[in-house]
Length: 115
Length: 111
View 1: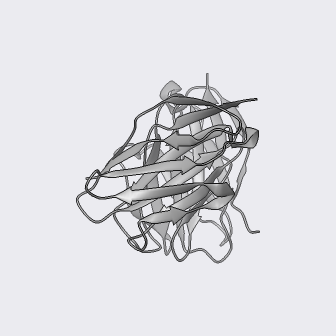
View 2: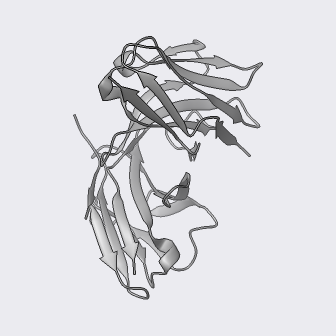
View 3: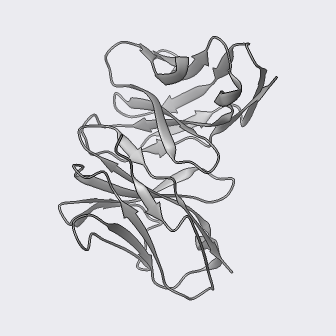
């Protein structure tokens, strides 16, 4: 069984300040981990993925995440927030590396960015 | 860039009615999925589909639900007799080599 816990339902930052969205996972196997973003009235867009290669993963729009097995964490960071980053972010785990997998989602973290 | 599309964007229906939610996956993908998100809750896996049959389904996906790929491009989710608790955002996804690509969702409101 696998699960994901996103520790914050809402995170508020000012434009230009760092972003940290926290995620802890539980998996019986070596997991694949993802962050997806959802802007209002849009689909879920893949930000980045970890698939057992480098533990520091770089994604789109300046986001990155670090896989820490000892802490079972996969926190999402960005050095400097933009207004356009305001959206809901989902941490997701899968126990498979193949093209077919079922994804387990966290509850999501709403990122609010103020000017 | 190819994308997954879903229609309609919003569907309102009365309890007990049948609804069909439609999805057009990315054309060279082989695996298809439906997920749902009840307001304020997690995105939950419903069903996966490969080679014209269900690969896996969750306990949510009971006899009221069915999926079909009627014509080689569309992928549909049918709910036979809707209940109030079926109100949710329904996401379609497809995958090829690895990651899943999601559509924008259909918001289903059952009154």
